[in-house]
Image 1 (cartoon, rainbow, N blue to C red):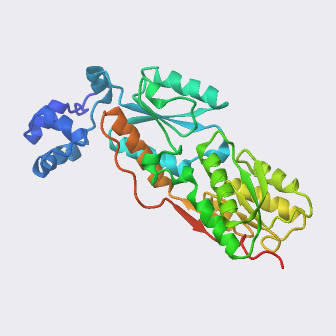
Image 2 (spheres, rainbow, N blue to C red; image 1 turned 180 degrees about the vertical axis):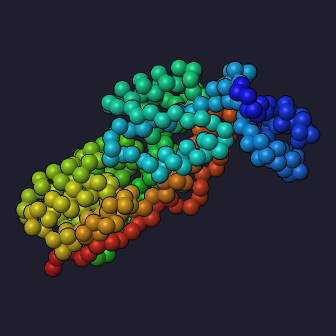
Image 3 (cartoon, one colour; image 1 turned 180 degrees about the horizontal axis):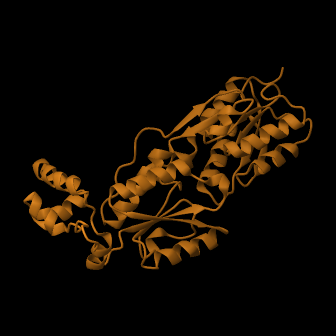
Length: 333
């Protein structure tokens, strides 16, 4: 230790100064709700005065816990869930966990192998996967939560996957007079893409509308562009529902390149409310998703599983909101 350097406070010293036991201080850092407010306030004063932080390395050696969690991300830049990631990371840090963020590439099988390798490494206590996996999470040596996959018990947090706004989009477009629809889907290994496609097909059938079909894309603007460029000149399509904003922007570009007016000849809907879509010309109609709620709730599920606790209840309010902008209008007369 350098001359004049203040010795690092130990948990026992914090306890002595606060007039409590070191076990009570440990409960304080675990966010234990049973602590009395007066006790919590005394520990708060000492922690703030000395800027004390628990020694996570020492704790992990005593408990054989690493206090580390991992988030695995899709390699595609079109699927980078920045808002969700920030919210999940903040939730983990608030509970005293350190976080490792990894990008996993390849098909679902390759991604699953990478996540299982991580789960069995002994380096993390749980994994939040933002990519689809071909595994029963219960078979993993540590808890794995797959965010975005459909779960009947968590409809609030997983409306992203069950795709209910697709029905609202089609109802809106039909009310304007649209009859012939086209869907540009995402990769079908993703629950969100599968369920949006399913709701699209069911809603078209329920309302007695016409579907020109479904183009299977890969979430990229290029897949949206190629799908629309591939439509016959007299296909009759006047409404396009794209799986996300990137695909929708590609679809708009392709329509304009063919001399089709947007929305004069064809209306286009995206999904995600990406910032670029708000400033595009025409501004993109879309579905805004509360990624912060999704990230917090996914991380809360993982932490509860790591601690052997019951999963917290999901938010009852919708995390999705349909936004109509300049790419939507009545069909041509």
